[in-house]
Length: 296
Image 1 (cartoon, rainbow, N blue to C red):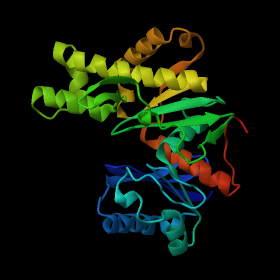
Image 2 (tube, helix red, strand yellow; image 1 turned 180 degrees about the vertical axis):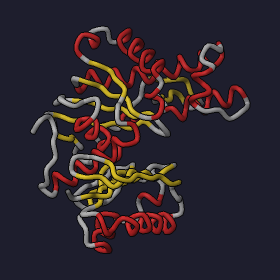
Image 3 (cartoon, helix red, strand yellow; image 1 turned 90 degrees about the vertical axis):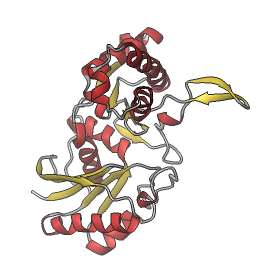
């Protein structure tokens, strides 16, 4: 059975694995993502060289507004290391292998559709909470990218307004990083999400959490209302917190009570492997190789 290298490039870590057409993992590793573009590119070359003799293609997912045909990343909010090199074109030329590149949230959603929490579904929406808020839509079993490869960017939506020096300012939800930052500022020390949930009964921490949760619930509810998915999946490290998923469900259904009847809100199941599975699925489909989705 042929094998492939699937790489999930995050702002903090590069996670990669050698996988086969049925998404079985043979080897997997991770390492810190280098920020300086030339060092980052050298890092990718080293990873691929280490696997080149046993792979038949390379699947990559990373943040950005990515044209999967040209490989161009037009999102200038991401680091220069994610934009400077056209990875699809350059890696294909250097290694003589097919290369697939796609947005990380899109790949994570496809991974869950192929082998995770959305298996058997046709229409799903995914929202990922981490350093930022990402999202993806799958309609009739197919990825919906939008006209400019920006579909599902939930973090760019607004959930409220507030008074500002120059009138009124719009507010977005803010991802997990915003929650951690606000609690850290309040305590005068750096904490992480695990600390916050271990101390969620603290009134000051809980107040910040509840205010943040409301904004996230509005974002989730609006996406569910607009897209009408069978399932709305929540990704990111915080999705592993059962208390958070329970709290989010309760808040969303309080705000949008009619959704409880027909829209399931669930945590993703594949964790760090979702993006790698989804990216490989796209590569296999592009290469017309076997890939099982919804029993096809």
